[in-house]
Image (cartoon, rainbow, N blue to C red; front, side, top):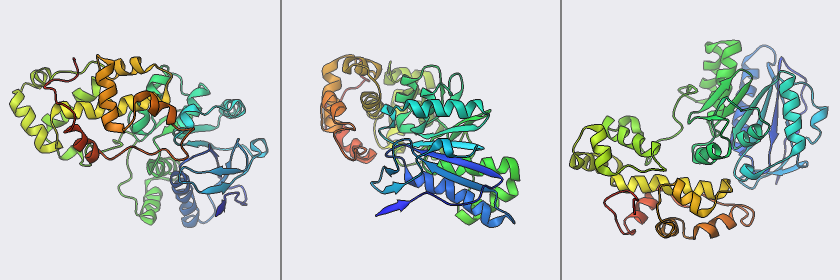
Length: 356
């Protein structure tokens, strides 16, 4: 089945262009458009119109394998109030000089430009995110930060800096659209759209993208949340459990007991759980060597890194890099957090993070 996404509609008060990169997230695209459609439904006259365009031919396959047909002549499209670039896995390596030049031209014309999910890579490569805050999906943040040192990378739902925006993807696209509508049509109107979409509450830009271990960190003890933060902030140079306990002014025993109770694993295991996905992302989204990635992920020996990575992901680091994504039609996230916790118990334990 192929979905025709070449809408025929008159130009409305505000016009948006959605640029889709192969393997884009169709859920994000549809929900962002649906927000505008409901705005039109509630308003006396249409407020929004939109076009969907590709720089890679009319037939574009989404990340879920669905085939779509979109417009292919971006220069024929009218000026837009908003240009959204949507990409998912694989976009970290995507490059299209024509698209880059087109985005820069649209930005010079004063149009709002937004990278959505991994579409932020495309906008960043155009230089439009330099010295600006930006975000992307949390699972790609470390690779995005490594690739663009001139971008102020943040973990949040979306960013708006003048006419340059970024969005983490998923349903955060709805929150972004509702906030943009709120700016011009008021919170009452955006709230009515949210009611129609059963989307409550409307989240702010700075809202967190994720929960940890499938449970919201907001319900955890401040001690556990603070320990998690210290671990996240020290991926490259992991703190020992005594160092974390001393920083938080608690006993090591109390820290371990509360962490196990609220998170379901030890402090050391959680550190490994955060460092290995970070290494995985660096393998598939950067050109760093395996040794450099091991060091950047807090492993002092390549052998410990290779062993731990293999236990988690079923392949040696170099093999995993080679398989992503060109040689696999649909790469997948390699297991749930609960699976990782089970795997952790099979890895020979260490009482300290990897000082080796």
